[in-house]
Image (cartoon, rainbow, N blue to C red):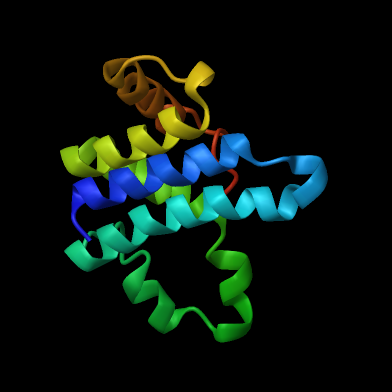
Length: 132
């Protein structure tokens, strides 16, 4: 998928997310919209060959299968995307689209978004993962 196709998909998923009735569908179903959007960005990055210390592609080959569910969690993938956002403009744009589409009241301008990512990464305890 192209960057624009992924942006369009994220925006469509966010629209469904905001229109969904959590009481009717349940949190787990609503969460799947977020998950699919995040996974689309990760897949884009993987197809481009973007790695952070071998994550995620090379790590899938060395992390034992029984540990993969715990290791490959949402927090680690968000950390991966945030780090890539500081290196790759197109990843930053996709990550921003994701955050802005799902949580519009929590995200300011693109520059503020990048500044907040830098702050989060420099903060020793923002991400609840032990790196890659």
